[in-house]
Image (cartoon, rainbow, N blue to C red; front, side, top):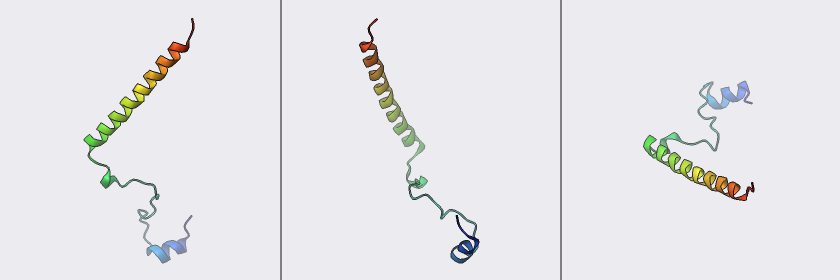
Length: 65
């Protein structure tokens, strides 16, 4: 929580909260193009799908009917 005095003394009464960024937040200027981001997402999704298919196959192989 930030006191009224803190805002007055250190921020010059500015209510701009852009300085209040999480240290782990991502700078959107360095993310890449939408095409690059979509490509990376597709790669991740394909990998996850392959893992899921392998899990399903493994589970199906272990079932005795």
